[in-house]
Image 1: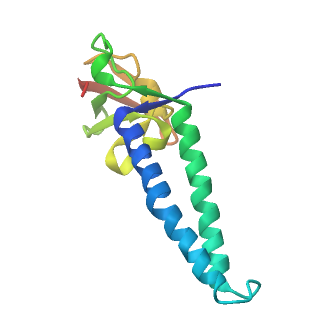
Image 2: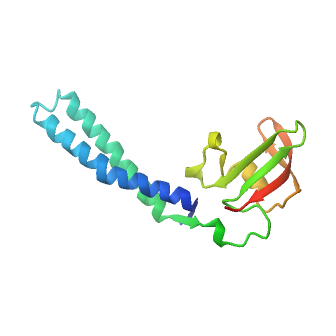
Image 3: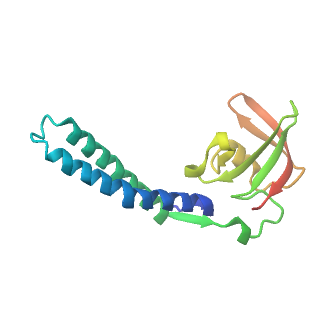
Length: 158
């Protein structure tokens, strides 16, 4: 079984979602099903079927989160040695050498990645190309648009 790498923040976010699903959403859905049952014939009761569908989604998400958390390897970047290299959880500022554009990304687990928030998956081409590199290293990242050369400007471990 492969462990799923996850930052401390990512694991906490999943735990919060799990708690909300179990303590707020699940009881609300159970109540909605009970209310819909009181309306009579279940075959033609849209409210009942909608609540059951919502229940199915909620229970599926609960199982999915529990599985991810039980198979996760939570990595606290502040407690591991980094040797001044890019590691999982690091925030990296890079410069596109061709067009002089600067980008800053944090390398996170698959479930935490959100490109719009500059959170990139450890399995993305950019992250794979950066892992293990140091400040001022130049890396070539294979992208769908071709190879792109980046220079590592700064690595933060927070």
